[in-house]
Image (cartoon, rainbow, N blue to C red):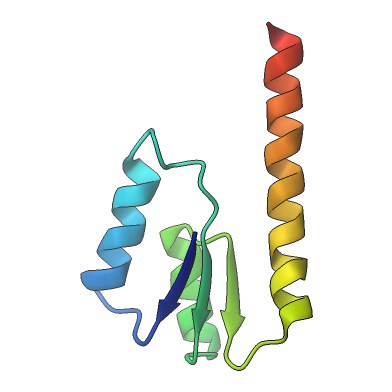
Length: 86
């Protein structure tokens, strides 16, 4: 899931991320946040909320691919491990 947000404040986006991380059906869905807020305070808050990666705007396509690739690989590794455990 990619989130394009203007502000990372209490409520709103923060609440949405928290609900996703607490929902068993969605907790393993990776979140990449894309925002103009590039300060360390905002990045740290996003990571604290459970975001898997955080990109500042403007971003390059290669940055997005670099963010997505390890998330996909991690998901594939989990699927393989789950399949071999059966």
